[in-house]
Amino acid sequence: MRLDKLLSNMGYGSRKDVKKLLKKKQVNVNEEVIKDGSHHVNPDQDTIKVNEEVVTYKQYIYLMMNKPPGIVSATTDLRDKTVVDLLSKEEKMFQPFPVGRLDKDTEGLLLLTNDGNLGHRLTSPNKNVGKTYFAKIKGKVTEKDVIAFREGITLEDGYQSKPATLKIQISGDVSEIEITITEGKFHQVKRMFEAVDKKVIYLKRLSMGELQLDTSLALGEYRELNEEELTYCQSLN
Image (cartoon, rainbow, N blue to C red):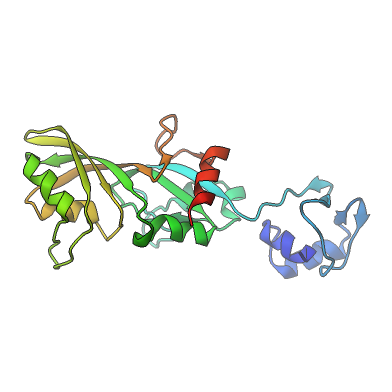
């Protein structure tokens, strides 16, 4: 990999900015000052320093966040705060994006990464990765709804949703349920319940496939995926 590309990817600015660092002799590789940005380095073997600070290279970043309500699942937004705004400067330089959309008022598990292939594998309906949510529903959820969801709900625009697994925890004026879907249409869970004359009043994502929300994460907190979680992600194909 070219040295200037590596440093640019690691947040040291544009190629032009990196060129200035090199010209000022502020970069060394294996204790040798390098002024040529086209110099090739192996980030796994070479020790690269900028102003005597070791550069630790990572190509991808994988973060699990407990998304709070009121925050938009996007990289930028003109009006609202986004999940990327919650990250530190060090993580932002990887330019991560949220995998799958959580509505502004929805909370829970959200993965942020700059690995586009993983994002596709986790969200593509063809991959059948289950997304499980806990929800509070205004209205009495019954076994009739369980059967209807299992067969696939027809939404208001005529779209026939894929079969979903609905589990009733509490059935009453305000019901509590868990639902697992394998697709992610706009406002899907809300629209599915609207199709059976009920309303979602609280929604929280608990899992995506085998990725479970870390219950030690407070709303707005995040952490890097651990080795087991990364292995699962890399096993998707």
